[in-house]
Image (tube, rainbow, N blue to C red; front, top):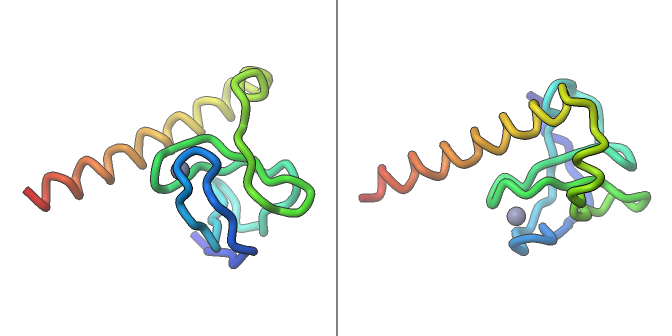
Length: 91
Ligand SMILES: [Zn+2]
């Protein structure tokens, strides 16, 4: 997985500062309307025309093909598991 540097952007859900992105199933640089997920809170995101991150609204999520919805949900579950494992390590 290749990480791409990008202009610093804040997660609109949790405020987490992000300055790089990785493709879920490709190694291309993000483009306007690319989808993303916050690695901190698992919020669904999209890149706008300035390549800043915006919320992916529920109705936009519902319009995505089922295969893409499944992929995003899978990544969200993985993010949640990573955080859960980190919490367990700290206990
Ligand atoms: Zn977030």
